[in-house]
Amino acid sequence: MAGQSKIFVEGPDDMHVAQHLANAFSLGKIDVKPCEGIPNLLEDIRRATLASELTNLVVICDADDDVPSRWQQIRDRLNDAANLPVQPHPSGTVAQGPKMKVSVWLMPDNASPGALEQFLEALIPSGDTTYPKAKRFIDSLTATERRFLAGDAPKASLYVWLATQEDPGCPYGTAIKAGYFDASSAHTFTEWLRAALA
Image (cartoon, rainbow, N blue to C red; front, side):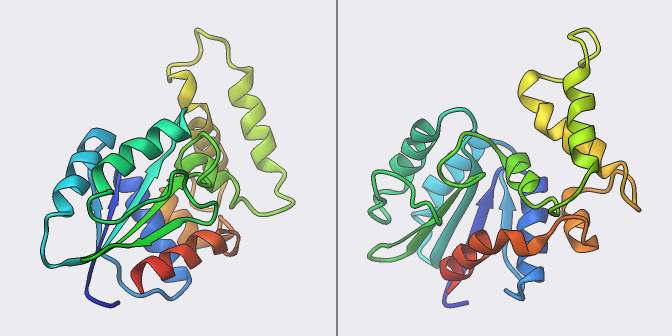
């Protein structure tokens, strides 16, 4: 990697997914900072633009329910470092500023509302028959049976699916390493990450 790079993510799950995908595509060791939520991430990346030793600032975060709003939050913190486009690039954004490169990936695909779980859902191997059943089970729960927020249904479905694997209920990163997810389906993401760290 040229210069000093740091990847800012929302939490430990995002960190482990990024690290294991980087390993799967031989990107080498990456420096990832889990920020424990979007408010902390937004503040951390704003401060990072002032770090004189940083040459590559990389952000991976969830779009959640509103892609334009999340993108504007990111732009507001990073536009002094690099002139980010009005909309995120579909293949991940990379912008060179006067003193640092700034790269951003909005989960799941830079265009759709969602989060890490929707990104991982796209990595479930083609032809898998268990995930649809896991999803139907979660969808079948009544309101009183659901102890999670409605927005966490994709996460619940993924964990039910992971519970059926050889190592039941393992974390996302471990599941990538074990081959439960099809890492090759993350090609667009990892090519963006390779360009971001170059």
